[in-house]
Length: 393
Image 1: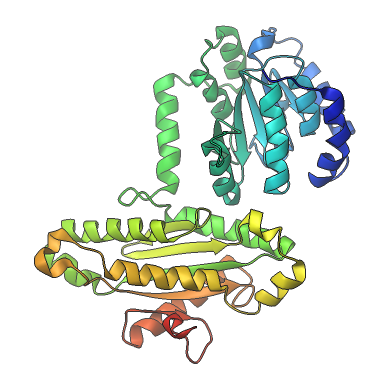
Image 2: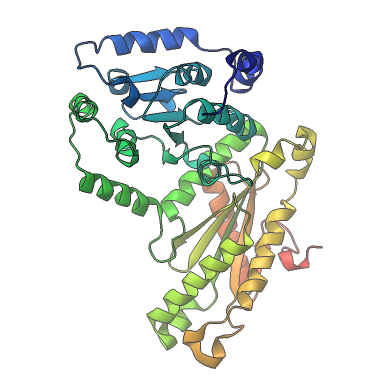
C-alpha cells in the first residue's frame, strides 16, 4: 500500500469537506454509531471482513433503519471513513456519490490509497451512472478508483452480494448475520438472476441500449440537477424513416439489423457521457447534457447566455449521426442496402423548450412530427421558422 501521511491529508480536509457540501456531520455520525451499538446482541464480525458505508445513506438505501442495525460501519462523512479505512481493513466499502465529480474523484483516490484490498462500490443516482462508469472503468492513465457501482435506491443485500467477488473467502458468520438481519436468504444463483433482472429492467435487449424507463428517469433526474446548477439538457427523439417498409419487404431480421446498426452509429457519434436509448419500436432518444468536467470551467453567465439557444454540441452530433447513418451498409438488403437509411428527429432543450422531462419529450416529439411532414430525412428544432438543423451554420 502507498505511504499515507495522515497529517498531510488533514491539511486539505477542510477544503475537500467544504466542496462536498459543508461541515462534517459529527452529530449524524454519532447517531449512526449509537444505532450500530444497539446491535451488540448480534455475533461479532471479523474485523478484516467488515462492510463500511460512507456518505448520506438515506440517499442510497430503501431500508435505512434496517441498514443501521446491521453489523457494518457507517460514516456520514466520507473523510471520517477514510480515517478509519487507514486504520483497519474492510472487505467492501460502499460510497454514496456526492459533490462535484472532480472533487469526488480526488477524495475517492485517497480512499483507494488507504484501503488496499477493499472492494469499493459506488452508490449512484441514475443520473450519476455515466460518472460512476468512468470511475470504475479507469481514467486516461488506466487508474480505476472504484470496483463496481449500484444504482440507488438499493437494498443492503445487493451490497453484500459484492462480497462474493472478493478474493478472500466470505466468512459464513458475516453472511449469516446479515441475512438474518434483513430476513432474506439469497444463494449465488438467485443473486445472479436478480442482477440480470436489474439489467433487463433498464436495458433494451435487442440493441443493448438503455430502455424507455431508464431514459425517462435519467432525464427527470438530470433536469432536476440542471435546475440547481444552471446546466443544460437537450433531448433528441428520432425514428427510422419508412421502417415498416423494410420489415415488410425484407423481413423482421432485416428490421432488427437496422435497429442494431442505428444503435452502433449513434453510440459512435455521441460523447462518452451522453445517454442513448431505444424507447420503442424504431424510435430512439438521446439525452445530451453538460459534461461535469467542462461545465466547471465555464462561468455561470456563459451558461445562462447559452441556455437561450439550443446547444451547438447537440445539434452537431445529431446532424453528424444523420449523415453517418446514411452511409451505413446493410448487407441483408442486398445491393440496395447502401446509403438508403434516413431518420427524422426532433430536438428540445432545457430550459429553453421546457422545464420538465414530460415537456421536453412532448416538444421533441412535436418537432419530430414536423420533420416527418416536411419530407423526412431531417432533424428539426423546436420553435424556429427555419428549424432544420442542417441549415444551421
